[in-house]
Amino acid sequence: MLQWLINHNPHYATYHIDNTIIESLPEDGVPIKILAAIKQEEDVGIIDAEMDAYVPEAPTVILDPNDNSQCFYDLDK
Image 1: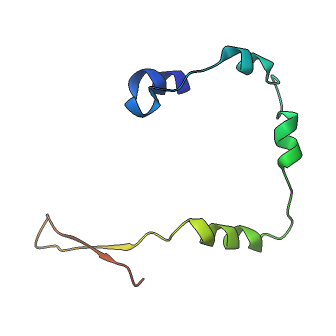
Image 2 (image 1 turned 180 degrees about the horizontal axis):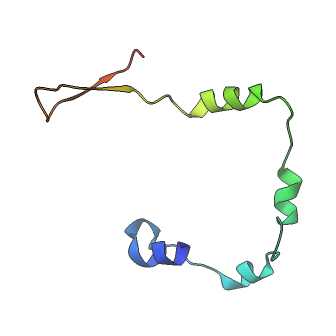
């Protein structure tokens, strides 16, 4: 998939896949460096708090039924 993006999407044109690094990754499982950085949290309320910090709610879209070219966003909702 990544190779396809590199070949077909100009935003990925400067990326290069280093097969030496790919081959050094474990076939199954997660690399040790990633596992060392993972913290399991039992408090699911933290998910909402973290999400509120960087994922804005999508604005409500209001379409004018009489005009197909108009689209209004209700940012108060």
